[in-house]
Length: 79
Image (cartoon, rainbow, N blue to C red; front, side):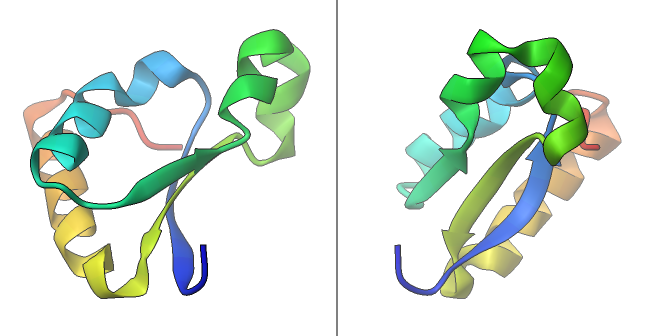
């Protein structure tokens, strides 16, 4: 995961389902760090930085634009 950076944080996996699908459609490599831990211990985990979306630094602008578009539509909740 060299050169991957965090571009967004989420509290629950359900907060980014649409975003995940769009990243897959665009064939943008990504990883959601702490996704499994948040599913197992959701209440205690939210205060520890949440689930972090990481993408390659070269894709970050495109991903941030996708996120911005989703936020404007009201389809995404970023913490």
